[in-house]
Length: 87
Image (cartoon, rainbow, N blue to C red; front, side, top):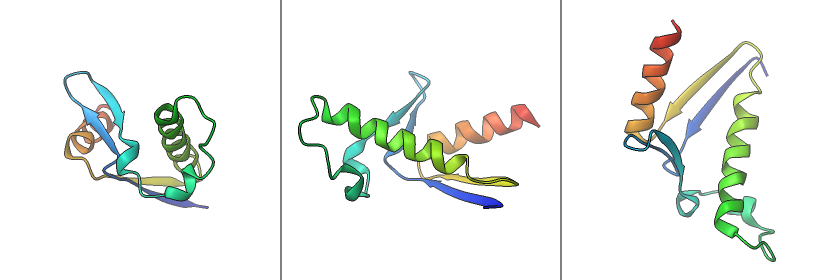
């Protein structure tokens, strides 16, 4: 793929006080990603890892560029701030 567009859904947000990314698996809509969670000791941690891995893979697909949109306003502000630091 030459360019990739990734939308970070409401399941991915940014905690400004803790300065960290927050994953809420209950807001993640791809229920098929969680099809094989039986027998996993910490299901919430496994779901968080699935979301983070999905984002990681998608963000690396674009050869020429990446378009990124965050549904969460605080995450969007942080990403725009980081982009401004790199310019």
